[in-house]
Image 1 (spheres, one colour):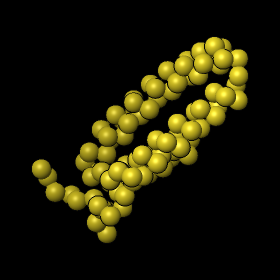
Image 2: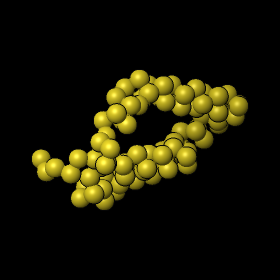
Image 3: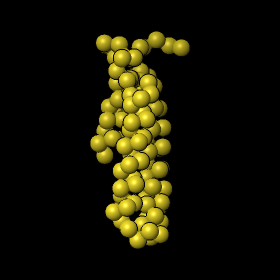
Image 4: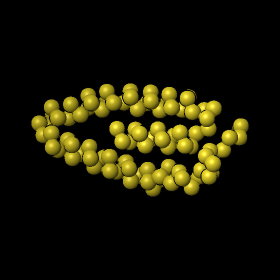
Length: 92
């Protein structure tokens, strides 16, 4: 949940107002539709291994790895691409 709040806050900061509704909608469709798939895969993994702690440990390592990967890309340093007054309002 904290990731979702941060992602939406970053989106609101980085996206021009005229595109904000569209970008938030696409983000929500992608994030909410994958939650069911993640629950299904997690349930199957627990059923297959009979070890809940192992599945949670693997998921934790995956989340850490994904976070580190994004931190090392330009997405991890979005703040330096924003202007002081918010995103650029120019039309392209």
